[in-house]
Image (cartoon, rainbow, N blue to C red; front, top):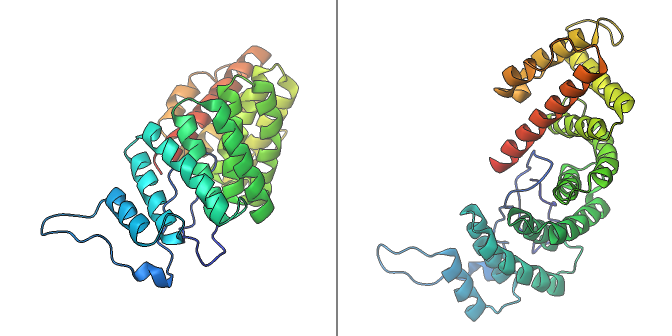
Length: 298
């Protein structure tokens, strides 16, 4: 997802990503320093310079701690991630983070972004405890640097929630996700897709823990915001739960796509608690599915 904006001369530049929660390889450009003019390894006709060969060349020509070398090291690690070779990328990023801490400091955006990729490699290889530790550090550092409502910060905070869920620490995840939803709403807006996805997951977790009143209250508010956005009418308190759900489904079709038909089948007779429970769980699940597919497609 989002990277921490680079604010120092040695940092790579980045595009402005638009995804939360969680975290694809963060592409960076080689810093434009004097040493950036150093030519790469010579190749013969028909050959191309690989990320690894460029890294080895820069280590020999500039040294292991030079910013250009560290940028090339990141390029090599993220090329492994792009090929889904997370187990190979993981130790590379661990060493890179240690070197960046030495050269730039642990609060530098370059270090933070490399740490975020390292955390992702842990998560992708189902090592959720170290992933949780690293994502927590990323979230803290990004909040210090960018604020708690910045998209990059929110992405890291949601990744912490995902790790907690993978570790079956659902109560902890629920308590952390509530503030994430509040900051998504404040920083991104009630209609932003990332807000909808985090909100839907929170509703699901509340319901799973038997907090039905709070879950239904959040669900109704979510539905009301969709109505206000699309101008479908029907006040917050008007109509049955089932009617409001129907409106919500129509309005979130843009977000949920092919999942809507599956969801619709669970929403018949939605006025009793049992059916509301089914509705909340299914809605949260489809939102989570959409979130993950979107992040994997970055």
